[in-house]
Image (cartoon, rainbow, N blue to C red; front, side, top):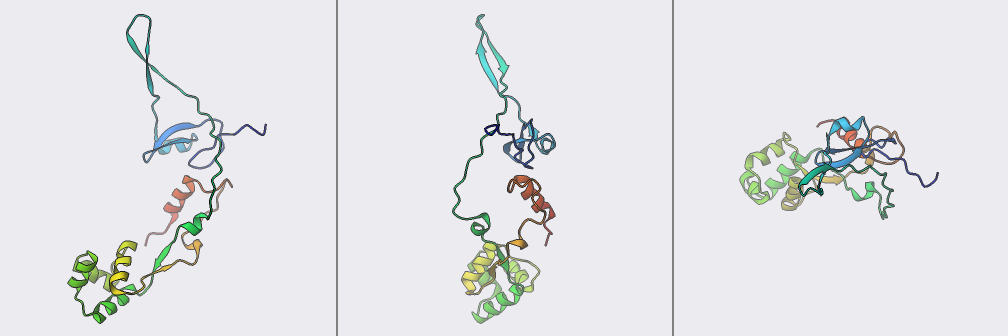
Amino acid sequence: MEGIQIPTCEVCGRKTSKLFRVIIEGAELSVCMECSRLGTPVKPKLRRSMVKTGYVRSTPVSRPLRPSKPKKAVRSRSIEETVEAYTLVENYGFIVKEARERMGMTLKDLGAKVGEKASVISKVEQGKLKPDNALARRLEHVLRVRLLVPSSEVEDKGLKTPVEHGGGLTIGDVLRMRLTKPRE
C-alpha cells in the first residue's frame, strides 16, 4: 500500500477520503468537508455532445478527484531565509525630523521628493503615522538614514500556533497566523 496516496485538504492539511472543489478568494482548491464552507462550490463543466437525432444536448461532466502526487520541490533556501522581514526603528519620527532639518528641507520639499503630501510627512515625524516599507525606503534614500532594520528573529513574524498536522505549512496555517497577529 506504499503507492496509494490519501487525498489531503489544501487549506488545513487534513487527510480525508473525500475532497470538494471550491473557489476561495479566487483560487480553485480541493478541500475537506469542514473547509468547503470557506468558499463557493465549483459547478461541473458542461460538455456538448451530439446525439444521433442531430440536436446538441448539454450534459454535465463530472471528474472524480484523484489525489495528486506531491511534487518534490527543489529549494535552495528555506522560506525564512528568502522572506526578508524588516522592522521600523522605534524613534523613526525623530530620525526623519532631524535628518530633514539637517538637510535644510521643509515638509513640503521632503514630501515632493518622496512623492507624499507634507501632512503625511508631518504625521510620520510626530509618530502618529507609521510609514509602510515603500515610504520608509524612499525616506531612507532621500534623507540618507536607516529607518528599517532586518528582523533578527523569525519568531516575531512566525507561526504562533504549532502546526497540527505535521505536514508543513498550509494555507490554513497562514490564515490562522493572519487572524491571530495583533493589529498595531
